Image 1: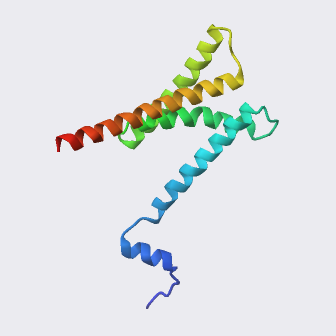
Image 2 (image 1 turned 90 degrees about the vertical axis):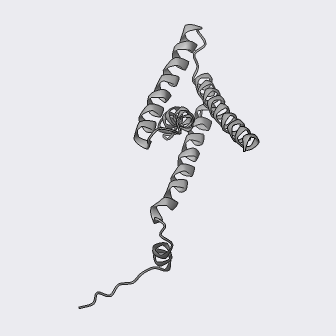
Image 3 (image 1 turned 45 degrees about the vertical axis):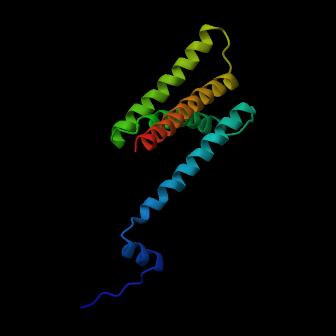
Length: 141
């Protein structure tokens, strides 16, 4: 007995190429996460009254430093990298809050800006380090 089914052209071509269709979903989810985090930062900085402000801002406060720290930990396996980057993100958030409270300069927009600046600086340093590593490998090859 033969089972008949309808195959979509994309699944047929994916099966022939040996590529996992779920791998196309990762860049899409990454882009959505960046958009949600960006909207959260903008909503908090603009002091917009919205039901989405708190969850999106919290997502930004966790995702921005976690992404920067995760980029620096390229050598770890994925689970360890996730755990360490989330723990590092929480540490960055707590250190920013504690530092701002210690100097009596606490404000929500200031905290968002400080976390964004630290995350951007870490990501920039990782990118520059990788580019220097590539340039050094090219010179020695």
